[in-house]
Each structure stands twice: as C-alpha cells, then as structure tokens.
Amino acid sequence: MIERLFSRGAVSTLESMLSFASRRHEVIARNIANVDTVGYRTRDLAELRSVDAGVLKPNGNNVDLEIEMSKMVRNNALHSTAAALLAQQFTLLREAISGQLHS
Amino acid sequence: MDPIEISAAGMRAQRARMDAIAANLANVDTTSARTEVRDGEVRHVPFRRKLAVLVEGAGGLPALKVIEDRSEFRAEHQPGHPHASAAGTVLFPNVDPMVEMVDMMAASRAYEANLTAAEVAKSMHQSALRILG
Image (cartoon, rainbow over all chains, first blue to last red; front, side, top):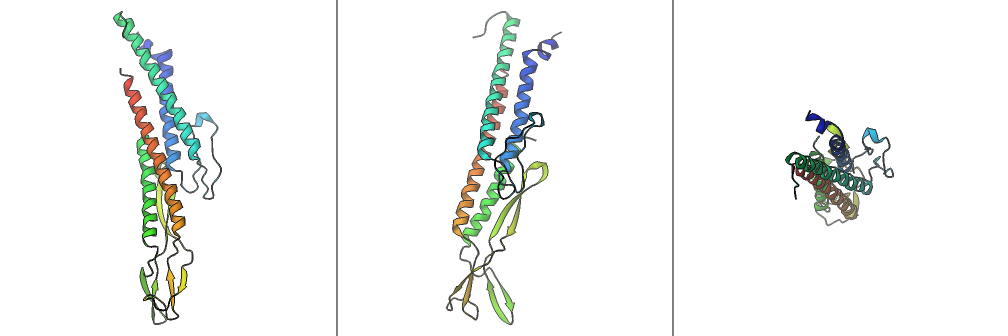
C-alpha cells in the first residue's frame, strides 16, 4: 500500500533523473581526467547515442575541456533540480500525513 | 566508480606531469648527468628531457608513463668548459624552457578542471543529502 506512494508518479521519475545525473557526472569526470591521455576518445552514456566531441588533437585525443565543462554544469543543474523537486515531493507527503502545512 | 576518485586520478596524473616538467626546468643546464667512456676518452652525457605521457589505464583512468625525449642535444663550442670533449664541444640538455612553460600551463589548467569536477561531485552529494529535509 505505502510502496505505491514511492513506486509511481513523480517520486520514481525524479529518482531516475537523479541516478541518470550521477552516472553522467561519472562519465564526464572521466573525460576530464583523460584530457591529455594519448588516444583517448571522449565518451558519453550509451543511452544518449551521440557524443559531443572536440577536434582531434595530434596525440589522438578529442576531449574538449570547454564542451566537457559545459556538459558538467548543465548536468549539475539537472541533478539539483531533481533533488529539489524530490525534496518538495516528500514535504507534500509529510503535509498530507500530518494534515498541517510546513513553513 | 566514485566520481571524486576519478577526478583525483586526473589530478594525480597532472601533478606527475608537473613533476617531470619541474625536473626538466631544473636541469636545463645540466651538462653532466652521467659519464661514459668511449674510445678511451671520458665523455659527459647531459640530462635528457623527460616526457610525461598519459595513457589509459585500469577503469578508464589516466596512467603516467615517463619516457625520454630522444631529440638531439644542443652542442656548443666551449673548450674551457670542464665537461667539454677533446674537440672542445659541450653538449647541453635537449630542454627548451619555452616548451616546458607551455606544458606547465596546460597541466595546471587540466588540474583545475579536475578540481572543479570534484567540487561539482561534492555539491551533488550535498544536494542529494538535502532531500532528507
């Protein structure tokens, strides 16, 4: 009964958003760590299908620091949005249970 | 893998690169790193430039490989120099300070980028904790 509150609707969607942002940050952090690695090609999560790469450098590396940084900032914004919305969902739930508004 | 771990590996790699650059700059005029005897004559071999190359290691993390720069030494005619050959030629290291400075700037910029990534990971952890209310 109570599981249904968490397994459907906004809560589970926001949970997926959070885990997506965490996994994507890991990939972006790995790209940044390999900005000077010989022969390293920039990567992204498989479900995104396309990879935003920079020009190929003479050492066979195509990680563009500017592209990676902007991806990281956008991903961080997505993560904090999902976290804030999720916190809001739990506040609503608490209000419904207690029957009084939280400030 | 923990993203902070990944960024730390990136920072470690860049710092190791910086170490190699510092060693090169420190030895820019080292004319005798070792000696060798050839044709009965003691010859001084200057410092050879170290090149820090990053390769992909375990878990997609950068790993450091230090190799020697095989380019030619700089030869100068200085017969009075204690490390001169019988012909009066002194060999100087194949280190160009300008190249080292540029490499140093690149390494320091990449280090900062990894640091920023670690800070972002930290802020993501914190915002996840705030869900608890």
